[in-house]
Image 1 (cartoon, one colour):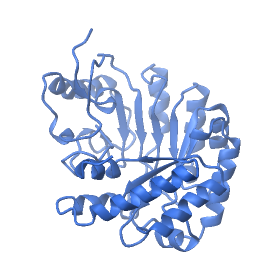
Image 2: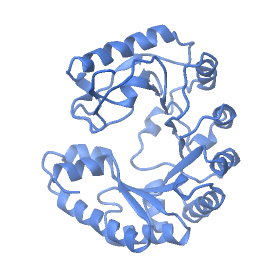
Image 3: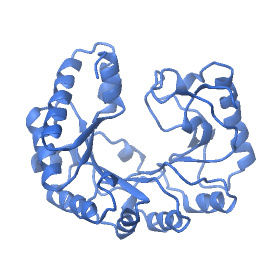
Image 4: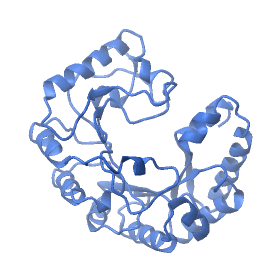
Length: 321
């Protein structure tokens, strides 16, 4: 049996496609905000040398095997002590190289990338599957931009479904209803997360800068009705101080989930605000009160609410659950 050591699934078996590189990781939850390691820098869709790819990952694995922590991973909440196997394969996937979107969220940095040319990711995964490097079980996360407006999206998702890959998460804004997602929800291989960040049409418009509140909830409900399991369709509320950080908006958000038969939701905190305020913690107690309020209202509506990423770190910083 292998010796246990601190690591994570993405260090061991991850593939993270970003706009201009294949990174080690996509998770921003450690001490080194903004510091990432590029396994393949300056990447624009070229054929990947998989031997070189796995050799680079092995060097980082070896650091962790020795009981040390690779510097960009310091303080990350995803590190866990486990007996990791030495298989050279890919199990955890993040596809985040797409830029196009049909919304314009106030906290999104994609608008600054509009001049970057998107590369094709489908051939990479076709090659990965043909070489038997991509193992079933996931998680596979597809984000963007908005995946459903990308020409490659349906082709790629159909490739995954054809090969019976499971645990495929699509981060979609649900402005556009997608039949391939519907098919994946029906057979239980796909799950979706829709970040509405609001419960009222006025706040939705302020945050998304598009007037699609009713259409989005209509599509969320339609996805939920077609899904094999209720936990495959989740919503998310990102608290953005100064925009939606009030009990009424959270109450209306929980209400919308209840009306539209959504049983699972997540609560997070806007990333740039969190890291710029983490040292002084001035407003953390007020955020915690909102979290407690949302959790209570969700419980009353028989909805499971989960704290995610920055919200988890905030609870950790306050030593609360």
